[in-house]
Amino acid sequence: MKKLFFLIFFLAALQGFAQKCPDGFALQWFYPSTKVSLAACVEGKPGILGQQVFWGAKNLTHDKLYISFVKVIYTTCGKTLREKADTYLDPDEFKGSGSFSGEITFSHSVQAEDCGGTGNRISRV
Image 1 (cartoon, rainbow, N blue to C red):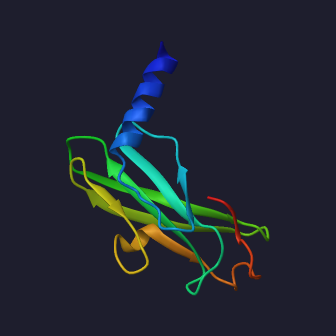
Image 2 (cartoon, one colour):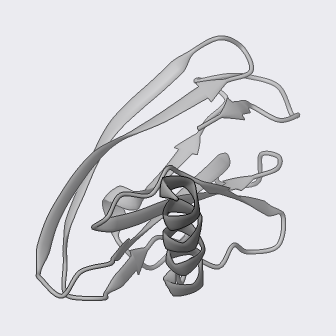
C-alpha cells in the first residue's frame, strides 16, 4: 500500500512540475519530497557557454517556502563540482533556470577548465 501511495504521489508531482528542457538537454528527476519537486536539464555536449545544467524546483504546498540545496555535478574526468542554490517559492510556484533568464543560482556550466575535451563532460548530476 505504501508503494502504491508513493507511486501516485510521484506521478502527481511529475504532472505538476513545469520544467521543460531545451533541445539537446535530458531531463533528470530527483527523489521527490512532500514539499518540493526537483529536476535538472543536462546538456548532452558542451556548447558555446560550456556544458550546462539547469535546475528547476516546484513548490508542492500551499505555503511560501525557502529552499536551499547543493548542486552536485560529477564530471567524466573524475572531478566533482558543488555549488549552493537557494530561492523562495510561493505556493505552487515553479522556478527554473536558463541561459539568460530564470533563477540565477539554478544554473551551472561545466567549462573546459573543469573537465576538458569536446565531448560530454558530465557523468551525472
